Length: 89
Image 1 (tube, rainbow, N blue to C red):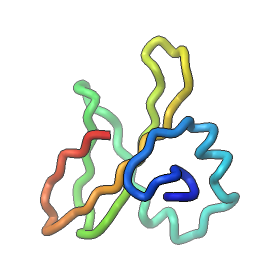
Image 2: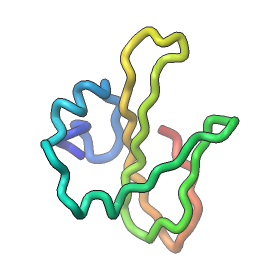
Image 3: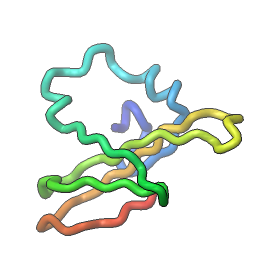
Image 4: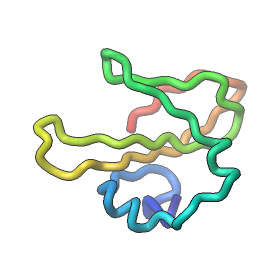
C-alpha cells in the first residue's frame, strides 16, 4: 500500500498515478482477497463475511461534473470479532 498509495493507512491519489505504480501481473493469490460491492441509492456499500484482521477498502470516485481527475481512495480497516464498522473514506 505504501508503494501504491504512499501511505499504509489512508490516501486519495489520482487513479492514473496508482496504476502507474502498480506492478504488472498481480500474483494468483491476490484474487482470493478481493471483494466487490456496488453502492446503493444512498451511495453506501457493505461487505459481509469478512474475516477478522487488517484489510484495505479501496474505491474510485470521480467529480459529479465529470471535470477533474478520477481518484482512488484507500483506507485501512481492522475487523475484530466480526463486528460491523462504518468507514468514511
